[in-house]
Length: 237
Image (cartoon, rainbow, N blue to C red; front, side, top):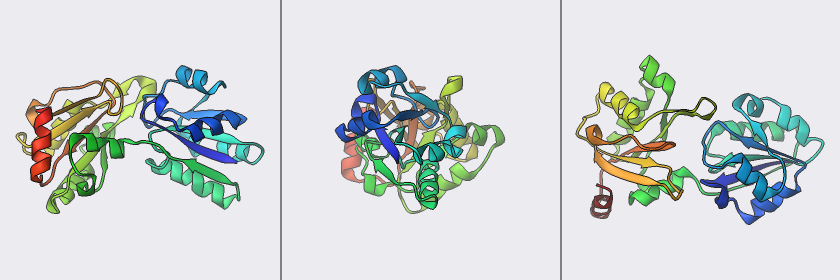
C-alpha cells in the first residue's frame, strides 16, 4: 500500500494518524524538493525509523509504485500532500496499477496565508515565480496576476526554491520581476516568511519597500480589500 502523509508546515504539525501510519510502514521517504521546514533528524526521532530522501526524479519514477506492490510504503510531504500536482500524478499511477493508497492531510501554506487577514475566499488562481521565469523573462506569472486583478481577487505567489543547492528565490527578486513586467512599484504587497513556524514574519508595504526575509517565502498581491482586510493589514505595516 502507498501512503502520502502530509507533514504540515513544521514537523510537529503531523497528525496522530499520520504518525501512527508512518511508524507502521516498512519504508519511509521524505520528499525534499517542494518545500523545507521539517528536518529529517527530527522526524526520525519522532517516528523512530530511518527516513530516506526522495528528490523529484525518484518521486516521478516508478520506484515508490513498485515498492508499494510488495509492502506498505509512505512518502512524507511538506505541507499538504496534494498541494503539488506531482503527488496527484503519483496517485494516478497507483490507481492505474491497482495499488491501494491513502492520503493523510495536514496544514498548508494555502490556508496559513489567512494569518494576513485576507479572506481565503477572495484568492484567485495561485501561481509560482520560478528561477527560470526570472532568468528567461517568462510572462505567465505576471499574466496570472493580471487575470486575478481583472476580477478583483488576491494573488498568492509561491517563490521557487532548491534546498539541495541552498538556493531560494527572494522577495526582492520576485518584486523586481513583477515590476519589470509592469506592476506598479507603489502597489501594496504582503511578504510572508516561514508561515506557521515560531519564526514567521509578515510585512505589508509598497512593493519597492518590501525587505528580503528568511526563506521559504511567499508573496501576496492583494486585489480589492474590504474594510476588515484593510484594518487587519495595518498590523503588519
